[in-house]
Image 1: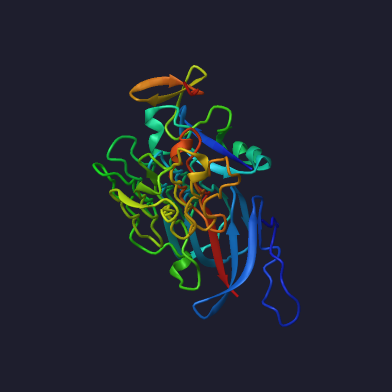
Image 2: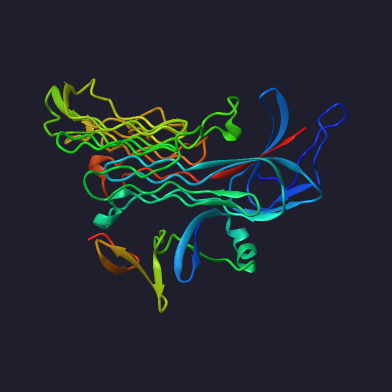
Length: 68
Length: 312
């Protein structure tokens, strides 16, 4: 079971709880889903030219964000 | 968790089975349940999947979004709930909102925790996940089905998160337990924990059954052995973050009244973690962070769910 980001217009619009075996079923219906785990995707994150960004403290920061 | 496809019906004299009429590709729990004097087939959908329905079935639907994770100071709020009565139970791709994940506090913006995802049953309705808390003072849990607890502080104690104000019991039935409780806020002390008397800042309790969380409190002095007043989660919510201990043995366990409560100190030398959302409930908010464990310490929110009840 994973948390999957629902992506619309290059933006994470929802995070859903789903078994990996159901991912293909949803993708076949037009959902773009990505496992949130590797990048820590959250609501509102945006993708530009294949790179994910989050606005943090007023700055667009590429994901994943690593602890300083 | 039990995963089944279709409904198992009984034999002679048992309620009429609905086997073959409904199947689900995600996780689903089936039971027979008396509510308000009537017997129902109760289907609880716990993960996203495709619901297939044959024929015409009418029933009631309850759903909730995912709970928010706890913030660095505040408890996470529980997911919002929604009821739909006497609606056609139709085939659909159902999405279950995830709980907010535990906070890593990599940035200041993350200090409010992370929001829960929305739950949706196309053709019937939807329920939003709990909002994340504010990342700057005065720290406050976001809005949700039940509010998360506030942060205790002398100069900037925060109010609890605002709940939806209506019951979170599925189908508004008193025969169903309330869900989506808020997580408790963080409690900590001011410093010299090796003293017999310590100064405690108490986090607020998470809200229950649609209520708001309570605010954090200014400091009080208490014996370190009785200052184990960690905040508590509401029904379905996580326990609050633990009191800080400069010495590990003076740290206390997290709050205990969340459904899944807080984790307990597993070792004399390990700091306890904040509680995650309810293990037996749905959509609960996570507890606030453990002071000494800010990097990983907040409780995770629990996923939402969809419940369908069909009269037997």
